[in-house]
Length: 250
Ligand code: T5A
Image (cartoon, rainbow, N blue to C red):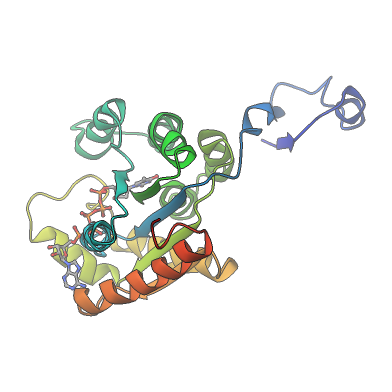
């Protein structure tokens, strides 16, 4: 299946590409719904990484550090950052029945579309710092690279309506280490039960993303002492917030 994307498709362009008479297997995706504002006064920070890499731990540390500077951040997560998302999270992680890869992809995107529209964009428009435990890169890596779902990036663009984080912090740990950490806390969820080969692809996927855009993505060795990692993250975030005029708070 081929997917075409254009910002402002004219009939001539479509005719040239024979899309107006295209067979049903050729899909045309309009980008009209992606014309939403790409700039905002707030700051969008995302924590990413494999299972048990320490995202939640570092997210909490950073939020506390920002609060000490009178800069309260909005903490959120995917999946599960909205009441609708909480239901989707249960279906995705704790369903007793099977979930097909396609259904999995659409459920993550449904959670994201609602989350971005109802939580993230409004907070960024108000000038808030938004810190999310996972976002679109998790889909790009888990569903796109590890499961091999070819439309993950396209669906991400639709669900986020073009919104991109200012900074993505990737905590990198070997999957054996991360899984041992989360297994210590009880029954593993559906994704944690995936084979080691899957988790290795996830790790490789995040590192590949970071290689492509070293300004947006910063990788931290998640096996180090949590306090040391926390200090480094705080220094980095402070610099980025200063650049955006959000630090110090006036
Ligand atoms: N998913 C998600 C997709 O497949 N596609 C998507 O689009 C999205 C959004 C989400 C699952 O869904 C998948 C990915 C996931 O499989 P989740 O509950 O959010 O599920 O799972 P995780 O994101 O993996 O969250 P976890 O809570 O399991 O891991 P964290 O947040 O990375 O780790 P954390 O901070 O809770 O720490 C885990 C343990 O390690 C210790 C902590 O004390 C804790 O016990 N720890 C450390 N120990 C030693 N050294 C350090 N530096 C440590 N840091 C933390």
